Figure (cartoon, rainbow, N blue to C red):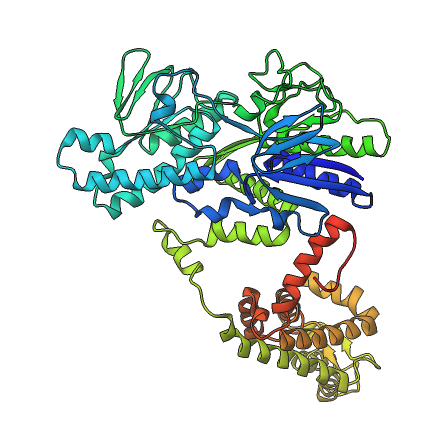
Length: 609
C-alpha cells in the first residue's frame, strides 16, 4: 500500500488532500493529512474576528467536516523534522512514514529586522492572533474611558496598522466600524479615536490599478483614517513607533501586516530554497521538489514560476491551484501516468474595507462598493461549499448576515429577529389542506377525463352578448337573452382562462398553447395541487412547494382572476423553513445535504448517513 501524507491543513493542503481522495478513492492507498490543529482556518477572514464583525467560529472549518465521506485520515500532531532520505516525519511523540509527501506549511509574518517590531506589535496570521487583537482593542477603550491624562488617553485611542496591503486595509476597515460601536459603549467621542495606516511604499494596495486605489483612499479618508505612505517604520516600543523621516506616532497598538516569509519550519527542513524566493523552496513545473521527486511543495512554501518567468503570487487561489496540481501528479505517479504541468489561472482579488465597502479586480473587471462586496461573498461561498458543502455555506451566511451586531440598522434588526418555526405549522397545514381540496374538487369535476377549460374573451360575457344581439337584431333570429344564456351556459360547463383583467399576452398564451393542449395542462394542474397539498401537510420540500404555490397563484391571478391573495401571503411566510418544525424537512434536508457531499466525494448515494 502506498502512503501519501499531506503536511499542513491550510488552503493548499486541504485541496491537495481532497484531490488525492478524488483521484485515488478506488486504489489501495493510504492518504493522511497532518496538522497541529483539528481545524482549517480561513486566514483571509481573520480581520473580521479581530475587528469584532464575527465570532471565532466563523473562521473555523473542522477537518472532520471537510474530510467526512473520504478516505483521508486526519492526524492532529506537530511535526518537528523530516527525514527525506528515510521518508519519515517526526513529532515529539510519533514517527510517520510516507511514500509521497506534500508540504504545505504556509508562511508567517516577516519583521524585516525592524527594531522592537516582533516584541511590540500584534500580528494577524492565526486565529489566536485575531483573538489577541480583539481583546487588546477592547482593553484600550476600557482604559481610555477611565484615563484622565490627555496624552495617555491619546495613546490608548491611537490604533495603527502597519502595512497597506490587502490584510492591512481589510483590518483598518473593520476598525472603522468597530470604533463607532466602542465609542458608544464607553462614552468616548469618535473624534478622539485616531486610526492610522503606515505604509513604506508610495501607495496602498500597490498591485491594484490607480483608480481602485483612489476609491479605497477616498473611503478611508471619508471615514477618518489617516494614511501615511512613504513611511517605513524604523523602531517600535511599547508606547510609540518611529518612522524613517523622524515622525513619531504615540500608540499602544500596532497591528503589523507588513509582509510574510516562508514558515520557520520549512526554512530548516533542508530543501534547497529558490534564488529569488525569500526562503520559498525551488520546485519544477509540476510543483515537485527539485531535490526529491516524491516530495511536492505547495502554497506559500513553493516558489513556482509561471511560463513568463514570474513567480506565482502568494494568494489563496495560488495555494488552491498548486494543491490541486500536487494531488493530481501524485495520483499520476501512482498510476504510472505522465505528470501534468501546473497551469494556474488566477481570476482576481478582492479587498473588503469593513462590511459595507470593497474594491475588487476580477477577470479583468474592476468593481467597488456593494458589487465588490457581493463578489467577495460569492467567492467565499464557492470555496466553502467546495470544501464543506451546504452546511458550511449556511453557517457562513448566518455569521455574515444573521449574526447580531450592535451597529445593525433598524431594517436588519427586524429582518433577523428570531422566532419559533412551530408557530407556522398551523398556517402550513391549512395551506396544504386548501391546496388538497382544490385538487380533489377538480378531480371530482372530471378534469382528468374531459376538457374543462376554455379561453373566451371578456366580450363573450352575458352583458356583452346582450348588447351584441341588440345591435344585430335584424339579422339574427335568436334573442339577446338566448345569446346571453348560451354564453353563461358555456361558462358553467368549464373554467374560462381569460378574465376581464387578463393581459393580452397572457390571453394569447391561453388561446394558442394551453387550450389546444387542455388535457395535458389540466392533468398538470390537478397533480400540482395534490402535490402542494401533500408537501405542505407533511412539511416536505416546503421551500420549493412555497415557490410553486406562489407561481400557481400568480398564474390564476393573470388568467381567471381568482383573487385569493392569502395563498400568496401564506406561501411567502412558508419560505422561512416552515417544514423544519413537525415536518419531514427536519429529517430530509440534513440528509440531502450530507448525501450531496457524499455524492461529490464518492459519486454515490448512501441511505444511512
